[in-house]
Image (tube, rainbow, N blue to C red; front, side):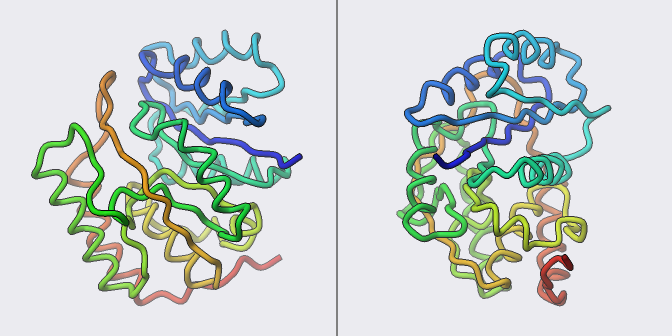
Length: 241
């Protein structure tokens, strides 16, 4: 049986964490979860520890001291999952903006030949619910900008709902990933593309969080804008083994 795990970064997600864990564990086929917990003052880690007593072989947590950024959270998680020989490694949010019922669809896309499956908001029109129109426009045209600059045929370049085959994460030089915020999502897709892996977009409906607080900021988009120009100039090389 394939070993499958979802990495879920958390910071102040006490309203959502138990529900998302139970929703993923309710999926058909066995999925594990690795929570990357960045020192939430609201008690998120305590909730995860309580759940670990119920799911000791499926729920894992790495606690970090303070809010260290989305990119570093995922890189920490990727390294752990590769070390523990998971075959398929997912990225998803704790807040249900990524529907757990779409997880098996991403998995199937990879089983059918993709190396990276992306839960895409934009490959089939615009499929976003509960976002202000200004944020939809900013996000959509950010992807158009990235696609144009990098020449990468991906419609949702900033998507954070993904499934990787382990070989992709073993090949990318994770220690050389520069961007830390949402630009990290662009850099990981571009590295996957430049290293010759097959990318497949799977249409999803993205629904903004209904509980908890968004972590989005204008600085995140600023990093992505300038980071893409720098990324275009860099040579993407595989990790030296």
